[in-house]
Length: 470
Image (cartoon, rainbow, N blue to C red; front, top):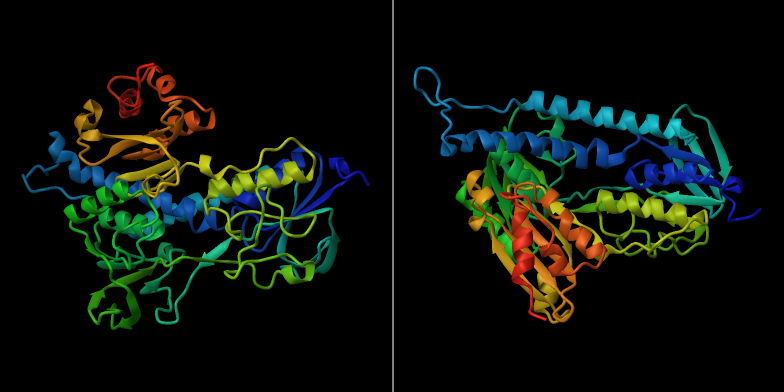
């Protein structure tokens, strides 16, 4: 068998999330015999319980926020009798729409896979060795499949604490939020990382009272400090209760609500509690030890930059690995795995070039080097920060919080990365990511025409400020 001839390869993908379905599509495109085993619905957590649902919820929350700010832009939102009008979030309807969209997206992915020739198997899979997979279909059929290449892409699930066991009614993980029949009166969010901050921001905009419990000094401890400070100020100015340096010791049901006891003895009462304290990879029971696949102490599969595990022929991608847990990264890692396994041209994964976004209000987008690496002396870079308060378009839209930060090499002016804090920062980070990927200089970025007025004009302004006379 020629390992570089895709038609001679059988690829078995275990798990149908972004890493799995993108890998399957690439392998099918390259002519391999592809089978994808999924125990739930294709799309995985990203489509069904995580990225698609949460960002749909956040999009609705953004509209609510805009409605509340309409009066400051001169729009009369009062009723005919002069009483203040009020938009009200009907959570049951919002959640029903979220689940419809997620299901529709899953159906679209399934159709794309089938149309590409991928054979879908509804069931569970375990590794017998590095060339054999045991399958148990939901129908009860059991059999083994031989493979030339195996990709593990089984994702992760919310971490649960013994002192705060979710019950699906009052104490919740983020996968259970979409079953709530009505808006929480007072939502306590435990965990101030990306997931906690996003849901705290969304539910506050929808009209819930929100208390954000952060064990760290500030929200989003893993993000750019300047950006995190802007977001925390915005949270507090809107009335969110942010408890910094406050570790939750226990969460229990108390009548029709919850009681959160902090490590210092303080108690916080609310109607619901969202536990956002990280994820655990779904690697237990996969038979990885049968194949000799190396995992970390946390249970994550160890991979290299082309998604290879410690065992030849076995690849892994997505949140079950120790690589950056983003859907975009999972999808790219899955594609890279198949390009490499099937002998196509491939470039190793470059995490430094990955653009990421926190979907709060305002959003925080980053790419490339970080302010911390600069402050710690890890890199040598010039940096400039331009506040959006001076941007004409931002003034027109009533945007008060946000900035654009740009990093470049001192000598050459090559773009090293950037940070954007703004509404739709997820869209504004793209030109900086393009500049980084293509090794553009700040002068090249500055000499590219930006629309006036536009928020992207602040990117051009930041690049001009980094110009040095030759």
